[in-house]
Length: 214
Image (cartoon, rainbow, N blue to C red; front, side):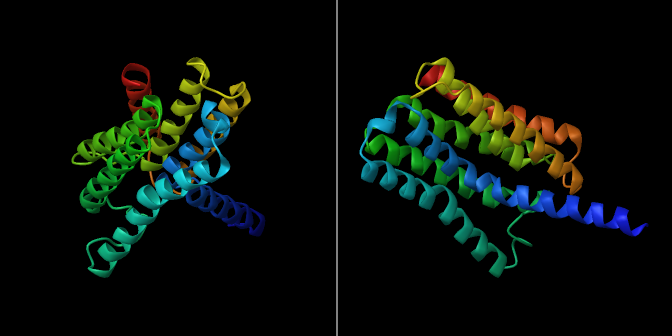
């Protein structure tokens, strides 16, 4: 392989790994909560309140699953934090779904708007769907996560819950979805169909819960 081509391929792989880390599925609920705290009608709440909600939700939906994965790795039940092997995903997915539901209960305890609670329920539903699909087929968890965030922004816009027009934010999120999908393909973690299916599941689950139950 020519030196220039090797350098380009190495750069693509490095960029793809960076995108996969920054847009990790475990971070998506945190990004979603941050968006709600900044870009929705809830931005009128005090800064302390918004930060507290964000920190607690991040602890429940990101830190706890990461700690659990660490324990699973220590027990040789999971190979690594990426959980790339389909047969290793059942228990981590189940625990993550429970964490998302716990976050929804926390938001309910804080008297959050129903649509906000339903966003977290939609995240849990997406993980449940992924868990069921995982018995037969490997679907992209990364794309499920970002699909849910795109659905959140879209619903905030169409339901008139944004603090300002979220049109450009929606465009940026869709662009990031495309870049993330390309990254997963470049790393050969998924097929095109698995990437598209993942986005569809995340988008559909959050849309369903926010639009019809929020």
